[in-house]
Amino acid sequence: MSYPGPVDQGITRQRLSLGWQSMLDLVFPRSCRHCDLPLNPTAPRSGLEAWLCETCMAHLDPIQAPYCDCCGEPFSGAMTRAFLCSNCDGRHLAFDFAVSGYKAHGPMRELIHRFKYGKDISLRAALAAALEASLNDPRLRKADLSEWLLVPVPLHYFRQVKRGFNQSWELCRMLHENTGIPTASVLRRTRQTSTQARLHRKQRLENLRGVFALRRPFPWSTPLALKGKKILLVDDVLTTGATAHECALTLKNQGARTVAVLTAARG
Figure 1: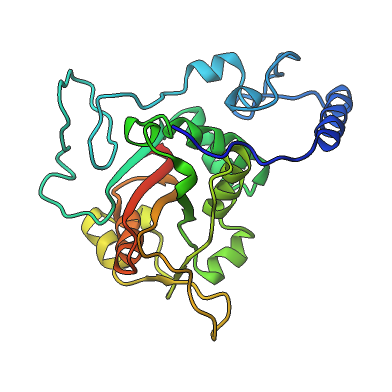
Figure 2 (figure 1 turned 60 degrees about the vertical axis):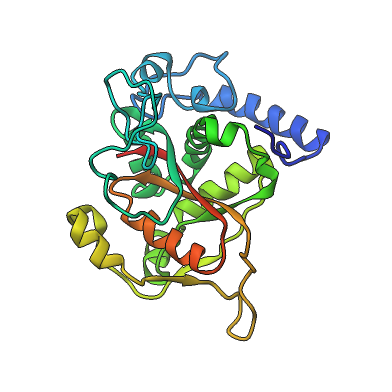
């Protein structure tokens, strides 16, 4: 796997940042964002270890092979070849494959809820680290990711105003800073939909049908050309894949060559 690398912030800025962090630690010691116990003073400044204590880190459930070749659903048995889970077998999904860093329970679920519903935007750094873990998938590890484009799943305008931010766009921005992979917000929602969490798979598909379109910065401007592009579609959690399917369908209809779904967690 290759990608441009972290965005250069300059040596002076990095030193100032480290100095401020050390001073702040004296006044406001760091604590685990799941159990609230103090972090070890020597805990790393980046990655999930900067946000979770050793005990909570041990309760994370990273997704490892074997898992569904399409949606990334992990499987507990021994598999010697690629396979499709019962949720994907027989379905035509517009995205090529989906990968996630961790299972969406325990400390990871708490981080996501605090980030998205508790509006703790600082946790985007922790979840971006979980996203980076999913880049180790063999299909991405062999790729030159500098040729790919990070694209966030969009929120409807009114929901984004109510929340104050789009969690997927914040994750894209942070992942871009960490890796240098280009990012662009190219999708929009054409209408507001009911919350997906309360719906079954078939209802989710109906709820989202035709809801996404390409975003224009201005009504008279031309959308970003996607013909031949390889896309990393970014979101916080993947559940049934209905949202990812509709987003990927829009991107593919506009000429995107490949759409891989990248999420911090798998529900």
